[in-house]
Image 1 (cartoon, helix red, strand yellow):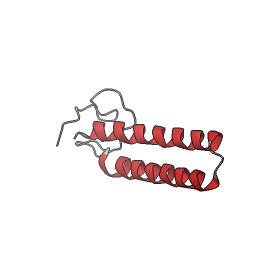
Image 2 (tube, rainbow, N blue to C red):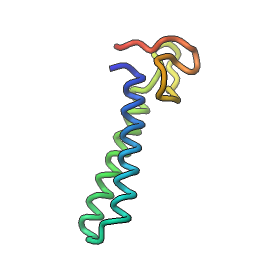
Image 3 (tube, rainbow, N blue to C red):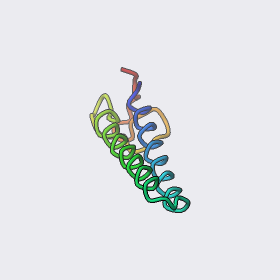
Length: 83
């Protein structure tokens, strides 16, 4: 998987855990289920941050990828290749 795909994966996971948090806070009244959903959302968020920090880096310059569109590095403009 390319670094850009890892970047897209981490952004998607962050968005999904945000949706889980919002929906659970708005619609769940049982405190046990609410706690479980909030913990699942927190774990999802932590995993997405780890994926971003470890894998979403340019192969050439080593900087973090800051956007999810395109297949080139926003810093050095080189193409992100699959490794």
